[in-house]
Length: 459
Image 1 (tube, one colour):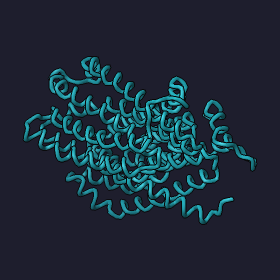
Image 2 (cartoon, rainbow, N blue to C red):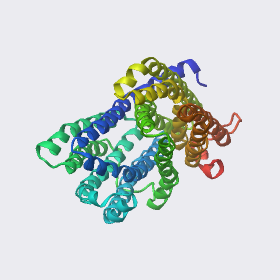
Image 3 (tube, rainbow, N blue to C red):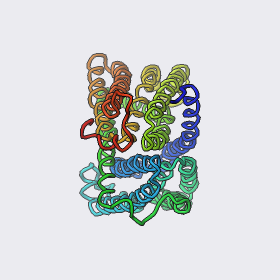
């Protein structure tokens, strides 16, 4: 039997130890992306527009790599919890081999199809030469970033978040240092930004994989895992997880289209508000990376009481933390609005956004956690269902209804309501899945039994 107070403190400390390195890593990545765009913006409108056309394509690559990373963390950490160390090593090797192959095929396809793809995205003929000179080094950097992410996933699955957190910060700093050198000093222009990322990610790969191999976290010899069976196991989780990663950008485009009906001032305010949102939920993003390895180990060991307690700790912390963020944004709304925009009309809309929407970040955070939790517990279809319901049932319809009833102010209020509803729906679906899988009786199933009763029944 566990003693709730003691275990709560121990689990909370363990979760904090795994989360804080990822927090700094994620914050560094977000900061690098903003500054990188600022450097490119100094080159003019055409290079900045060319960079913009990589965003939807990058979402496709990131969706695949993150889906495989989620599957890696779930399966490897569960194997470690069940004390099947050889299986964990072999699964890691299989992920790197299969993931690198899949990303290679995708990037080569994107290179060969670049002209029709860019035309489909609406690129003007005058922009095609600018994009073509940037496309190859950018695809190379995206490929390296995916391979590096697989290394991060293996480290996190083995309970080490310091290594990926440190490398996320290090590669961001390298990129920031090389950007002005390659773009302006060497006069490489827009391709220089991509080559800076190539060097940064290449450095990360040169550091992470030797450490992974040296610590015995990965092998290319398959004995406990048949490659075909292992790939099927990876696909069962990574497929729905990859699709789930593609839903937010689709939702973001649709939401922006709704906001655009109110004019450029509204779009500018909405864009600034959503950037603030990224920084507001950075702790939640770190939790979604640090929580799954712990859950996987407890699940593999059949310690379902610890699984439940750890999730409750994470949810309560998220609600309290995001409530504090909301209060801070409300108190600073006037100052932040004036700092973010010199235009009085835009500043007024940003102020209104900060007074309303951050109140819902607790619900949004809970929903994001539940997606991560369900993937970690071997319920990828349920995780995909939560993502789809959040965006296309709770959020986007609420935005449309709010905009119709009360204009842009109504849309902001609807965003608040939609995020809160998404958190409630995510929590209820997680609870229903957990009850269905583990049962209500004192004789709870082992991790293997949990596996056997998977998403074909719960999704």
